[in-house]
Image (cartoon, rainbow, N blue to C red; front, side):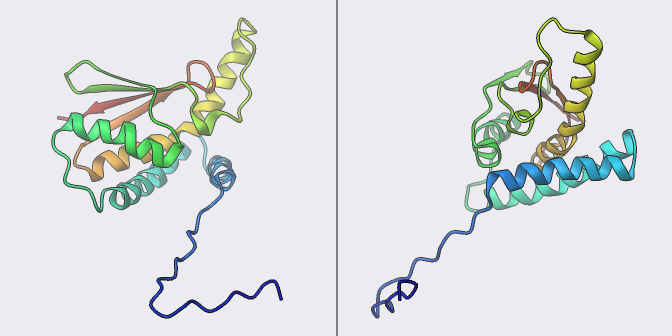
Length: 180
C-alpha cells in the first residue's frame, strides 16, 4: 500500500502542501480572457473591460502581498515595491529598468515580458504593415497587465494611469503617470 502514509506523531506539526497553479494555466487564462472580451465587445470597450478586470485583480494581489509588510512611504517607494516584489510575485522576475523624470512619470522596462513571450515577432526590417499588426495584437494582451499594475498602485495609494508599449516583442515598456 504505497499510497498510505503513517499517522503523524503527537506533538509534531504537520506541514500542509502548498497549493500552486501552474504558470501555463495563468498564461492560458490571460490568452482566453483577451479572446473572450474581444469576441464579446470590440475596440475600446473590450480594452476598458479587460483593464477593469486587471484593476480588480491588481487591488486584490496588492492587498495580499502587502498584508504582512510595514506601510510603504512615498510614491517612489511604492513604485520600487511594484517593480521588485510585486513584479517578482506576478511575472517571476523584477522589472529590468525603472526611469523617472521626478515629475510624476515612471517608465518600467521589461525586456522579456512573460505574457508576450508566446507571441511571434516579425523579423526585423520586415513589412511595416506586418510589424504594426503584431504590435496591435501585443497591445490587446497588455490591457490586462496595465489594469493589474494600476489596481496595485491604486490600492497602495497612488492614483495613476498606466500605458504599455510593446516596442520589440517580447520587450514592453509600461508608463505610469501619477495623477495630481
